[in-house]
Amino acid sequence: MKPNQPSDPDPQFRALLQEWKIDASLPPRFQDRVWQRVARTEMRVPAVGGLTGWVARWQSILLQPRLAAGYVALLLLLGFAAGWTQGVEKSARVDQDLSLRYIHVVDPYQGLK
Image (cartoon, rainbow, N blue to C red; front, side):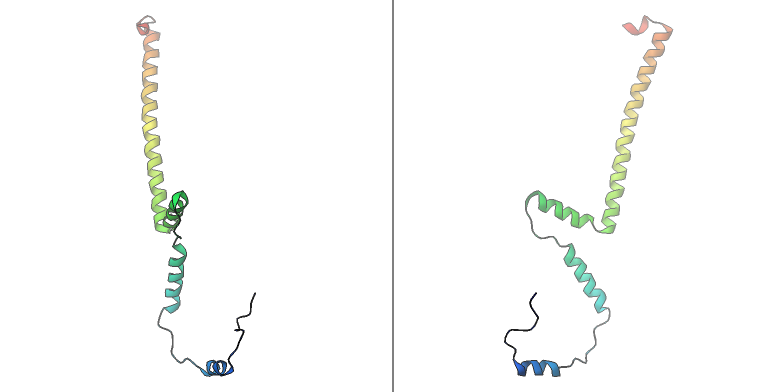
């Protein structure tokens, strides 16, 4: 790792920098705004084409907590709806099968038509 000092130091410039003092204070909530900018910068996704870029964009969107919670709620709702429709279909098939069995028990020749 290279040192932070330039290869050709200028003694007059270095002396001038050492004399320089800042008396101004930072604006209110400066650190909070800096960390917010850092977070926004980290969330940006470099431009990548194809499937990788698409996946990276969706990851950056879904990593936000409120959107992730909405995404999970949507998936739960879709799962519930899919399970309910499958349950209704299976229940109808079982009802029909049981009806045919009952008819066959009462009159064995009735269900063979």
